[in-house]
Image 1 (cartoon, rainbow, N blue to C red):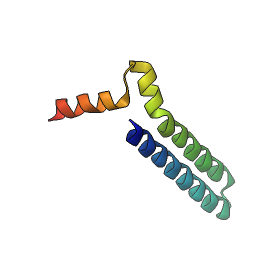
Image 2: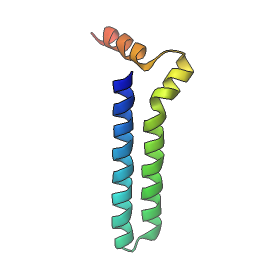
Image 3: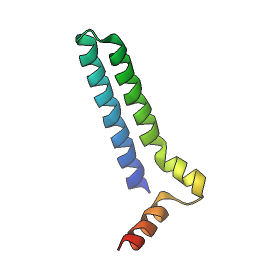
Length: 76
């Protein structure tokens, strides 16, 4: 579970950084509204990706490692 949480946090941080970089380029191109949308989209994606393991655990009552183990058994 720790590895899955760490990779989700890493993916969330990458999404936030990409959103900020794209937003800065939009600002430099004088497209202010698209810049704000890019930054807000990056932050929203970071929140969704970062909190995904906790949401799965709270909705199903299972840890994410149990869900992944079940999915690998079904796929194999």
